[in-house]
Image (cartoon, rainbow, N blue to C red; front, side):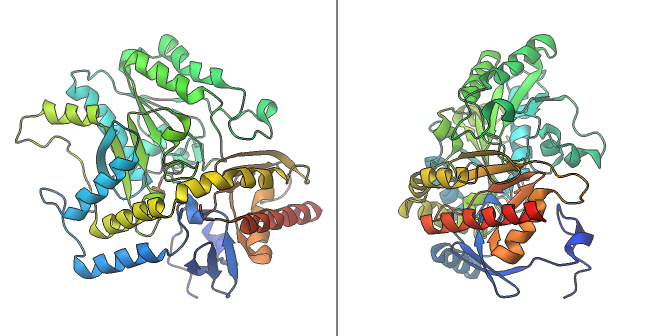
Length: 438
Ligand code: PMP
């Protein structure tokens, strides 16, 4: 196969080409590789295929829409599916968050939310609020806004300075205190106070527009918020008139057993960014769900005939994406997918923690149907242990896992059953043991 031309995202291209891992079909919990093997999907693709692969109702909706109307603009025009998809999404969101701006993925969603935050304050006559606050080890996609508030050096250092006026709070991972936490870690709520400290010592609070956090930091290795931490961030933001944005690209659509992490944690942000599971990943789509208050500020600030929000994408509310989103949100409801995830989370937790005691494991942490297994770093080798285990899992164990640094991250489709959970973790356990001997 010709492998010269595709410049792959986030991939060591030259290494990949030596022995390409290729997938060509998918169904339910499984991929089929190009060499004909059935591979159990322990990662829901990239944390996105929440209802399982190729769900027939979603496939049918996309096929039908493709044959009906391929594209329609949503600049000064509309099509009914855009409004229907927005209403369905709003009805699933926490109360008071009911205005939906569509984009095409999580990165666009993050940049859209940051722009809404900045514009919102300006429209209220509070133009001095220009600062954005993210966290260390946060992943907010690859737009310039996202890499700026994100806390991953690798995402920034190739590109020089990103946005100015951005600060980062510490991330809350503390293995020394919270190792092998089940559910929310006990220690670390005081890390939310760092926001208040920075507002007192470094930034005038009246210069801060928004704080953005992932309720669970997924891509950098499943970093969970300590008990009470998100509540505290909300209180501090309220006190200082700062908007709180939840990036729920991973935690949205049932990963924690509820529609959004906001529901699970009982904390209402001013905006939710979502993507991935919104269409079950069958067609790219992202969205920002904003509070009525934010939306009304835009609507009331500009004269009737003027554009209230100067922002949008050619493919905002693309008809195929809308058809996929409507079908997906219906499937989530009709098939009780979020409840299934909630019901399975205790079994998943027990299976994940059954790996404790295997060689080189440093920590296991989980919530809902997501878990991180952190390994001791290995010295003197090119690959991390996690990467060795990932390769072994793919080629020899027929299971797909994900790695980031020394961490294995698991986030299976929410339809996973007990037998598949057992198989996933027993194969990973085999791979961990074998890697330790190699
Ligand atoms: N935010 C979060 C929390 C994410 O996990 C991701 C993707 N993993 C993004 C934003 C970016 O989404 P996308 O890759 O769809 O642009």
